[in-house]
Length: 351
Ligand code: KG4
Ligand code: ZN
Image (cartoon, rainbow, N blue to C red; front, side):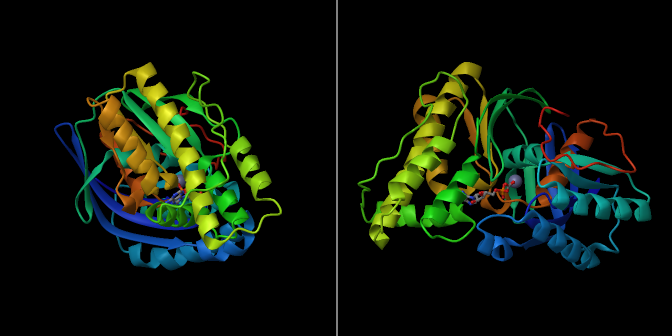
């Protein structure tokens, strides 16, 4: 089965043609063609994604990128319908609707967070192929991105329950805001990571200490607004040297690491999950990956920890196609709709 997928939920315009098949219990994916255009540099002066600009860019990029796919044949078109920025989502939806109509194939609505989750469970086999297999149930997923931070439990295949979430800001947003306080460019996550790594290599330690909010609440909920405010207050009226900046970035990253280690410990103890997976843009963070890997190794050695390949942690259309294929090959029948609706706050439980 072949699916052409579109992703426009934020500041990445993505199109991908992916072939999928099921052999036994395994899902095999082959990326036949993909196009991805990041607008990050355009949004950088705003310090975050500017929705109207994202909308205009998707409108311009979609027809340009689609040219490469115009002659392709496939069984269905898939498109992200949420969560995300609605003006941006609408561009992908309207474009996908036209393509599905022209090609006389069904149009499948896809949830962006489910796509992060499922694509993170798959392992690369070659440069363009992935396999999703041997998933022990239940699956605990920590989804961390610019707009979301949640612990999701999949007790039955493709059925989700949110067992913990941020009560305020998403962790990616906190990375971006703190980077901005340090005069680092958008997107801030990779910048903080770079400076923090340098600080650790030089053994620099920050004089400023940040809080670890909600560490011992006994729930899997998290909060980042207090951490962000603490960062703001402690940097106010201070002029940091390059080394102090790097040390501060490390302190921030370590606070985030401490929070996710404790909350993951809580979630794994509460659920007894056999598989643990992380997904979303922040799952690219090297320090977080190492801390969580160490936690599982030390305290949950029987749990299968799946780390997403770095090529698919950021937003892209390959993950949207993989999600659509996994659902279709699992017999999850979507109502192939003629028209779809963007839902900015779409929950992963609405499947
Ligand atoms: O999943 P994603 O590409 O878009 C959304 O769906 O939001 O996530 C983007 C977020 C941004 O906040 C970005 O700063 C963060 O992921 N990010 C990182 C890293 N790479 C991207 N955060 C921390 N460390 C990174 N290496
Ligand atoms: Zn995302």
